[in-house]
Image 1 (cartoon, rainbow, N blue to C red):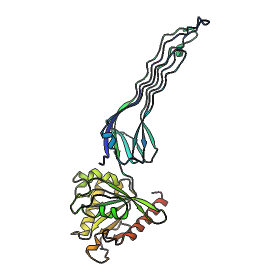
Image 2: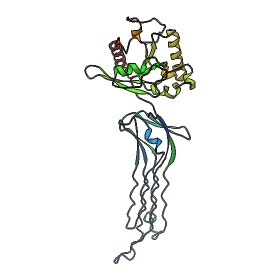
Image 3: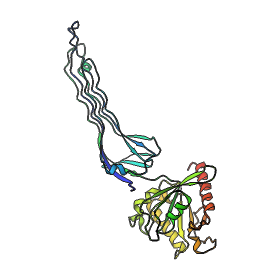
Length: 330
């Protein structure tokens, strides 16, 4: 099951309270105050874990609380600080405050850590309040409460190439042929109900990641079909590939519609480099690249995933463009 949007409540640990204590030793009758401070409450941290691919675990448990700090003790002993609690998430997770909508941060790589709730400060013991004119203080401070907030965790897949196309355009078939991914494939629309990632292996240990998302239909940016739900997963891709089946009624209209849906969803996403890939070339029985008006596309390809036609040129073209973007800092 693919889960990419969850809400969790987190509570950082409350700080321990300070202690009121006085030394009582045989040879120190005027020992004075020795109440220690309370320990700090534990923080709530979010950490990137490359072994995870969904936020499924947070559907089973939606409240996480860090350990509170221990109270101070006599003999100027400070209470032990509470243990931090760590929430592991897959890279590509965006963290927001659910109530304010504030963007707290995002986890991009394995090991990235963001503190989302700060533990409370420990209270001061009476030793802290001792002065030359106030030698027997009985004051102490309670520990501060830890931060509590509701978080929205949203996973956006990180990939190099994003496949965009209408239902049954051949996206899943292409991904299954060029990578080890095994998405569901069938001869009816909306077979793909969740995004899929595949690693494409070229020679000399060259690899890149391709993302296949559910089919985009007209009005996807308004929530029709599954497009709006998953368009965010191609926001992080470096380049887009618009897939058009060779048996489409109108190649130009289909390309224009896909471009329009992406532009209406995000101008930034529409500005990414893209190419046009005509699929199901085996239906023609010959290699033919249709002519369409796509002035912003960096290339046009015609392939057959089932017939293994044109795939080497496609992968090489993607790799070359990715290298260019990498050199340019994209």
